[in-house]
Length: 278
Image 1 (cartoon, one colour):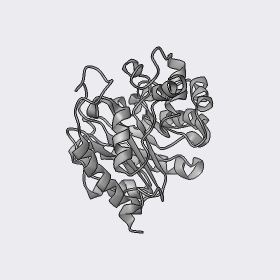
Image 2 (image 1 turned 135 degrees about the horizontal axis):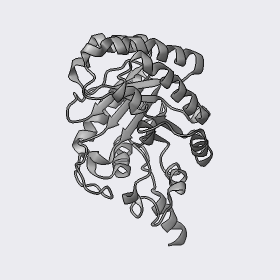
Image 3 (image 1 turned 180 degrees about the vertical axis):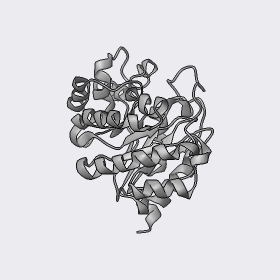
């Protein structure tokens, strides 16, 4: 089998999902109408096999909330939490953030085997001049990976951090460089770990509602899928997350990705309900 066929054949695990799951606009086109918030993650996990947790960016969750996520989801489902912005946007990975990183990891470890890679989404003003903060944090992440099995991905939003110097640092410490489709970044894949982490973000605030596809990006997604297939021979797992801002309705974007990868499209929870009572 050629390497670029591996993703189609599921020779390696592929995890596809959305960035967050609690959107009011999804009640009707994705969730059954009037679905309450506490039921959404359970229904979501019947559809996709992974989710990127957006809420953890704003504040660390309480342990009982994390335990509830674990109980609500099936085996083999994965959560990929975003590191709180206090660490990335306020402290810029300064040494004073290291204990906060350890505390956040400890909380997210309550997900057990359902914990996927943890994402550091760095702000646009984190630049090459702050490379010492990154260099000081990466050994901590490597130590956590070695001792606890937790993996990490990182996204940069300033082009001064593109290039082999930073990629080599990440590679040395087994941290994945997130491949991102975002207006100010170069859309490319750079392998720095044994897994691939892809984020289809789009332009924030592009759509006033998020209940249907409003900007067809099939051709662009096809290019991403081709790049993912080429990279599949170099990694052991692939994570792909889609944002509502990308095409207007991220569950449908996920299905485009699945279809172009040659995989079965997901059946939305509202469609499952209709098949039961239709």
